[in-house]
Length: 318
Image (tube, rainbow, N blue to C red; front, top):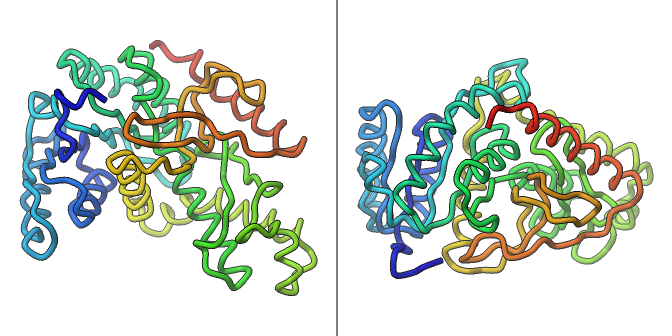
């Protein structure tokens, strides 16, 4: 990151719907930034959200929040894109792909022609495909274009495993990998609770039908968004926390291992497709992929997920 051109205390949010506005609210409370610019196709919406959120600033940390234009994002350390059509009840994330790819064709060139030097963080769905669309249109280095990936799915998995085992979910170490969507994989073969393999920990807690129970938990993770959308029409609190977590890792150069979306470069026999895998995330975005152990079934499912995403990407006019 070229610090001379980047204000490390500034973030831009493109898209002020449920996810964008909730993420902005979460970032305001985080104290990570001293300046936040909100953009939306409906400029009044962006200004209204900025006003509403800024009224809570005296109760949190000082931060300047305002509705702006693309000219205001040039020096942002992180440019977050949440713009796009929302997932409707009964609709998959991949059903959104063509609508949102078209929206990205208008957004990404506005960013690139201003020679922004920050990190581009894609949150819009389907996030893996749209991260690849953004990477292709922008021509930016691979490390600087990342997606929120399966950070939220992984949090859901940890939450459900923690509840099932009666243990603090922060002590659960497990990943959802692949597509942020229906072909995602719960990598249980490398999952552990404070170093103890998850199946062994299950037995410590009196559970002996692990395969059956873990399969149920994986399905619940996969169905989470559908259940929430059916009940309240949209999901936004969980993803807002995921956005905040990724921004923390970047701004603080934490070198945190997070399952973000990024362009793969050959691990597991997968190349030139964006999907979600554990990676070291710091000030320059994705530093390197972290190769976790997978069993044969998980590897096959991961490769199938990659093929699905690549086929969809090949079908887009980008």
